[in-house]
Amino acid sequence: MTLYQRDRTWHPPALAPDYKTSVARSPRQAMLSIEGTVSELTGPRFGHGAITPLDGDLIANYARDGDPVGERIIVHGRVLDENGRPVPRTLVEIWQANAGGRYRHKKDGYLAPIDPNFGGCGRVLTDDQGHYAFRTIKPGAYPWRNWVNNWRPAHIHLSVFGTAFAQRLITQMYFEGDPLIAHCPIVQAIPDPRAIDALIAPLDLNQAVPLDCLAYRFDIVLRGRRSTFFENRPEGN
Amino acid sequence: MPQPLNYLKETPSQTAGPYVHIGLAPRAAGFDIYDTELGFDPMPDDVPGPRIRVTGCVFDGMGATVRDVLIEVWQADAAGLYPDQPGAAAGFRHWARVVPDFDTGQFTLDTVLPGAVPGPQGRMQAPHLSLWLVARGINTGLQTRMYFADQDNAADPVLSLIEQPHRRDTLIARGADGHYHFDIHLQGDKETVFLDV
Image (cartoon, rainbow over all chains, first blue to last red; front, side, top):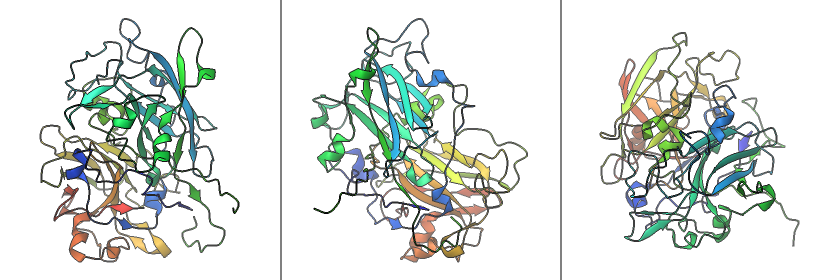
């Protein structure tokens, strides 16, 4: 067993000068390419013991004296691999700003207020078919220091594990129709417009709950696993 | 046109940003929300193997500490086994999250010294930790490894692949007898070797 080569031309390059922080934080030497070993082809697994159903409901999981302010949404989809196979029982963690674009983080000083009823993080395990779902508040856009007038499009950060440490992925989900996507240096660091499209969740009215909340669908694809047809298998993989 | 292959493309990476702690380490972000925060479990007393402490910093290309980094660690147990392998240490998590002090940038990891594990063609790999770094300004999480200066690294198949011998040292933590120091340099003369696995 091994993983398909990661297509580094599909991901944003380490050095993306318009995203200024990447200038001093991007490696300049060639990476060392190695075959995955047991150290990279295994990875942590998580059970339902530590993760409760409330963890995936950001409308409720930090509520103190009522629901958080903002547009109520469901974000749902599947975790698949590049073969199109579902990745079951894998951990998906998300974090985001509140409806005003403010993060609950000791280092965020944006003038929009903290929402006392919103923490801004959630986590779920995918089901046997790789499905996941969160209920949350649509995050607001917010300004950030890059150029003087840069604004992040509304986005949700996602972290996904898969079954191998080398599948580990963090990305961001954007919302269909957001005009800020075209102006964001972090998004536009991705060279291929088709890859940017893969980060934009469409409105999914079929999964909206009438009179309650809207829904967006976002599928996540992790690197594919290869079980080769003809290969020496000295490690018994 | 030939038949289409119809593989899906991997979801493109995006930076974890400065507020990654909200999602992966909320207490570090300044609030308490989960009963159990993942990746910070204390080590059960009965896990076999020598205890080690690793300290260090991540530096950017200008030599400043990267204080908003989050590091994940994945490792074999003291016998060189990963979960689900027969004999793997019960109760050992093999996986940890590491967040540095936001003021100094120094991180601390307490774990057990991993054993050697098999590599390509059955060649043994010297004891190592697998590391994955994410932070603001890092567009795709960076994979690397940490080896130990007081272990026998001479025949390690990954270190041996590094063309410039002095760059092998970027993956080897200084120290001995359970106390190690490991700095990671994202860029510059001391740039750490990062892995495309």
